[in-house]
Amino acid sequence: MSIRTLVSVQTITRIDPIAGADRIVLAHVLGWKVIISKDMGLAVGDRVAYFETDSLLPETDPRYSQFMPRGVRHMAFTDPDTGETMEVSGHVLRTMKMRGVYSQGLIMPLPELGLDPSLPVGSDITEACHVIKYEPPVFTGRGANRQDKALQRAAQGIIGEFNAPCSKSDAPRAQTLTGIWHELCKLEAVPTVKVDGMSLTFFFDGSELRMFTRNYEVDPTHPDWRDACELAHRYFTSRIGGLSVFDIGMGMCVQAEYAGPGINGNRQKLAKRDLFVFAVWQDGEKLPRDEWEGSFLAHAAPEINPWEYPLADSMDTLISAVDGMRGRITPNVLDEGIVWHLNPDQPIPDTVRGELGDNLCFKIINNSYLTKHHL
Image (cartoon, rainbow, N blue to C red; front, side):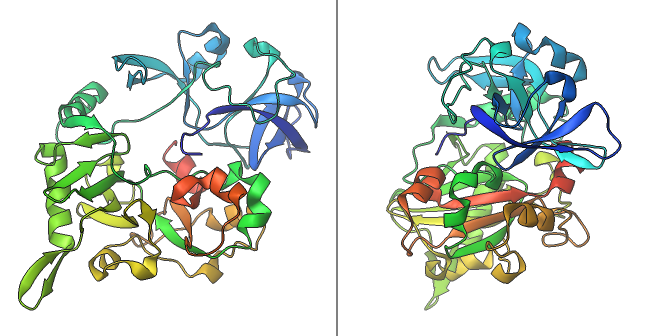
């Protein structure tokens, strides 16, 4: 599942009361929990449209007019079919906490969206709902306080589409994986700290080091990317017999989170910009950590002892354990969450591969982090 499904047909599996609340209840969909109004008249077993967090409900669609008074955000959006870039605006769904419980996403009845209530569970209805993923501006500060300036700055460095010989950096949330959770719990995985920054891919094509964001190839000499490219050259060069050897070899891709001042608001309060390697690929195959070069390990996202967050625990137990996690990147500062990377050398069921794709990883985000930063 390489492209994120933002809106899907799902079944309400459970409804819990909320202490001290008379008009709202907590509905369970997949591994998510969503506050809904009792007036909606929904019950366990009902098919509904579930909208994930980060969904932008377009301001121009009358089906979402009730949400616009809660706040509207703007972003540049490039149509994947036409290549045309336009500005879109709408309400963005974020994690919220009310009456002491977290609510993530939105539930709407299918008929309210003009959709057939008999659609199969699991159907991707993102396009039918006219929803896109909200992508906030990455670069902040340096006088680029307005969103449009930050977007223009980034656009100047784009030189093509993402075509590195590896998967785009992406990891589904654990809450979407209830159907395979029992299989995931039997597999060997390496948990690492999720760093809040910008995902970059470095690829050596035999003649030059190429550089990609999540969706685009960018010019490594452009001001927004030059520092990251220089860090890659410095970090990933080894000394062998008095010679300097660049460790990103032919056909190799290194993926790292680029974080620090001026990037995503530097929510983890890093003193300087840095790279945190989270994946290494060779000829299209993801390598286990024990096959990484030493220079990649020296600048890797911090690894966590698997016994601290065992997959054998229930999903709710793990989500609760990650909530409030702090100090793994910066002392006393909330961490964004954890990514579990499956060992690619072990037998992995097709059902798991089908959900995780070639990245073979998934994540749990720290709910305290999400609510603190209104994400």
